[in-house]
Length: 594
Image (cartoon, rainbow, N blue to C red):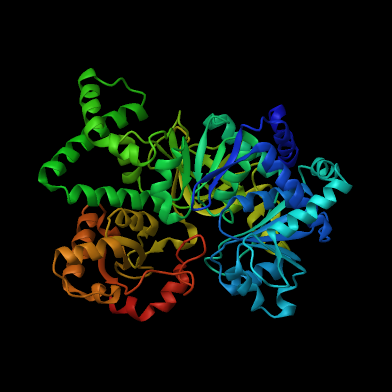
């Protein structure tokens, strides 16, 4: 590591006290307007929260949970916990009470930050011997004698800091690279979540590689909305400390389109679903604009694709093509860029596979989406495309000092300073997945001659048909999800003669289609049964099948009457489908397709 990064995140955070008060660390909206928090103010609030936690009896090594949406309080709480040598245990805000109960009990957390009363209800409904919590602090105030308000904690911390003004600084300096910083619980697509133990060294190594490969700093800003309970979002929080950019918190997922225009970020980190929705919205606008607009858009895409290909391969762009592209940009692509704030250098996609078609489209429009690959166990990215070296359809080359190799079956093995220490209280799973320093990712992939990694699928998700053909379902599912009418797709066919699919609809787009085609049904369940909509989905699948090998094609499908939800156990809090659960729940439906 460089000298700068031979320090823990808490040591680096101490320096924020010295930054000028005009330098903004975070920006948030209260619904009436945007408010800035400077770096010295960020540090001061964190110091007070840390003091309040010490007053509550939190000691070095104690686990402290955070159950909340992404907001500036989350970041302050995390740095306060780490600063006193305690261990942060993030919990998704949309976790079920059962998952909350499991994580609190497994981690042994005695203190928890919650967002509001709705999260308190999840904890309150647990039996006293199940929650084992001694202290609960709410970011949003409400009246309950068992819950501390954020303001009360700050006041308690203020009294502590007056008495011991150097305590927080001293504790920040005590953290060592090998110490446990956080326990991040996996989504649990196939069973109970595992607690992934990440050390301070994992954080520092990941953040240094972001600095080296992306050239981001205090001149940059991002619109932040990823859940901090997910490792991808958490790295955004940590890298903000190391690199000093301005972190602007989106008001909500529904407000992202508005916030982009207000904040005008220079980069953004998001999951593929965000890009899929933007892509689908653009498709809708083009299709509703008449034949002239559609032809103009098709021409612009063709010109943009030529420029995109040349840029990616470092080829010279002919002057005639550049002139055409300038016209295409002014007429079409500038509107897309303006809708995203107009200042983006690039966007980073992670958390799930991104369809190559979407990455290519945005690049043709002048917006670079850089896809990366990683897991909770690898502190997010271990491979990533960068602004200077990228290849669509891949997740980029190895990041920094990361080493990759492949098992005989194609499973990706990783050795890196980013790899986790262990699964919390689970030596059996640790030894099964971490051997001689190499972590077994569970993903199947391959590397091209230039070192760019391609992910085939999760090892456990691969389908082997009755004919012996191996099919990667995610590839096909992502292909279908590029269509604006499709929300989710789950493909089946293991040990069967052909593939079938369960499909859920994009409600807003399918309602617009129903209105245009005089379909009487008003509920999503009714729309799923309508012959015209079934014909529409059939045509979409037929079009995608034409691009696939015969053994990859989907022969039959069933439109489900509702979108998958966390509450019904169909998807994880990070929105990954639970294939095994769905295959059992819809077993009879799937069998009718054969």
